[in-house]
Image (cartoon, rainbow, N blue to C red; front, side, top):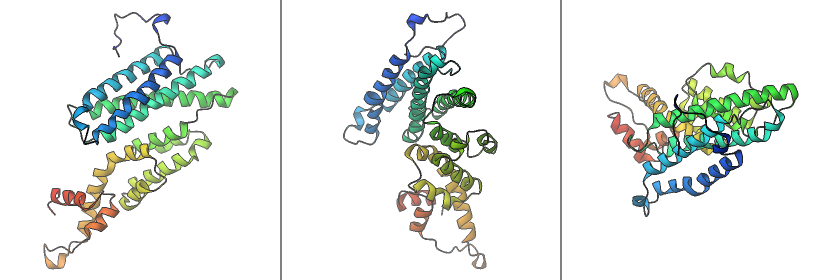
Length: 280
């Protein structure tokens, strides 16, 4: 169980810290035995038996404790050759923690605030990415000088970093500092397509990219947070263009099915909810 560090608390002894192998096994247990219980969110038969608040609080608490052990042991340092295996194990675990929080931001988005706190989830995700950015930067610098260890998931998480910052213009200058093979990776190229579609308010291209085979599941989970904003903008553009000004307040018809296809809705019923909300 996670316990917050305090000023009057002594640093733990080496014998009290979980070594990388144990941390990895602990994370594997959570991934294989606890996290899959989230399927009960949509399983009507067992839904009443599943408490999403207890589930999320338990997993978040334990992953936070795992990350604390990793940071306190400085397992992400890559400047010493004998630490390379430990560093890779540490970064893989933090990547798994980040994936959990990305998934929860989508799957738990319909839960009330007393069940799931989006801001706390984002804070933990932000902390994961801070550790990952520091590791990737140090590892790439080490690789340029003396040959660092390979980080197989860097391109994946660099793409997440872009998608999480679609509203930030300075992300483009940051990308220029990434290694060339990362900048030209499939995941980063996709994320940049989405970035430019969002920046130009090209909602048709944005939702086509989300629905395309290029888009991976966790990338879609991240992009889900931008759906409402872009759909609102699309509604203003579309219905502003289709208003027939020559006939006063009368409006020309626009296909609901076409709206559903253009804006990535699950069906016409979902479009109707939006239309009612906008009093259309």
